[in-house]
Length: 555
Image 1: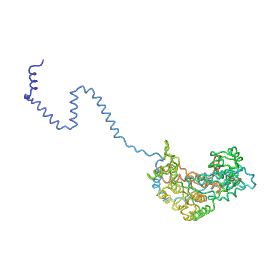
Image 2 (image 1 turned 180 degrees about the horizontal axis):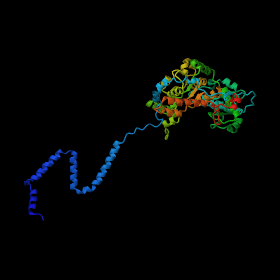
Image 3 (image 1 turned 135 degrees about the vertical axis):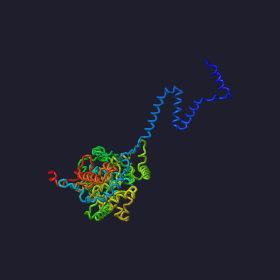
Image 4 (image 1 turned 90 degrees about the vertical axis):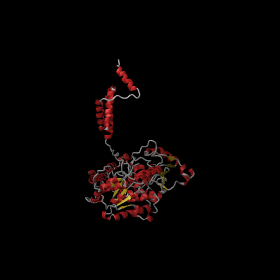
């Protein structure tokens, strides 16, 4: 029961205008003291006091206090862990960055200061010829040919040396089938853009005369046969032969039709005969490639003139010079899908070049381009800078004369500068010959390539930087001329990619690796042909004989 006094006090508190009872002196002192303490407290302290007061007045909240505490701690730890996490700078994938310019900048002072060895050109080929030297032994027939089974007409496509493959294989097929070969027609290609005919590249009369007792060769199909086909060779039955067809196919399929029609056509004809052929057929290939095919007089004369100039310039090295086949033209860089140091301009140039040359090939759905993987797999063309570093590492000094066989180098002024710094005696056909001398060949890619071929053929050292028919034919031809040794440096581009990707690469380590690579090329100079190998790269033993069989068998 509430007392009467308490009821009266509550009524007074509710009535307006009722004076408030005076406060207790103790309470006043307490409030005064609290007020002074609150003024001295900081904001965090005041906030903590308020929260505590609320918790004390609302005791139910205390039940959730542990849960709130744990949640706050977890949230704080999560935020703190994110704030404290170190920033990780990932290193680009191996091979994805073209580092060779940085390597050159790092090693340049060491390269300039390295005079430890004599020029490698005088000591590079150390392998002894004793007992293993080979000599050409392709003999022409002296007998009379039997009556011909008919005429074979082929179309040779591609560049200079792909056409050469077609010619030699056509001679072999014609000889095997006892047919008459019509001088091959060169198919015009939109990439090579060379309308040259057979007689513009090769000495046609010499070709016919050399093969006279082995394979009949004529300029055209006789008129009495052409009359049957309205004087149009496209009306002649055409064989579309599969690549690397065996000799049995020509015997079982082509010969019967040849006997029936008396004239047949085979188009296209690149790589349409297996390398694993009987010895008698290989002899026709050897005879055509190494003896019958001689460049036309204008090309041969110009090429030999440049060889004499190179030997004269390198007189201090006994007329010995290095030839380098450099494939760093725009189309080669574009096709490789590799990235170099040309930035956005290079990117746009390569996109345009791929679209011009191979419409849609590189933009098909699902096509993935991995420049780094391409480089590590040895599929990127070596740059002029990388060729220079490699050769200096192999011991070729600054005074070495180098003949550069190449088309227009991509971004040449920029990319050629480091190579010229390392080898200031570098020469090209454009530097050795006047504009007037090169005028008859300038707009014909195959004729210009034939001049390069001649100068490279007679160099002391040939360096190939990319695969292809040009270096392959040169290696085989050099073996044929130099006792079975190709005298060719074939760099290991996979190893080079790893070395050039190492920003800490030192000169001594790099040079040791390059000398090992040079020695490996020397040891691979003598290689005998295996059944599936190209006879145009490995002429031994089908086109050559041992020079000293007694010594060879003794060893």
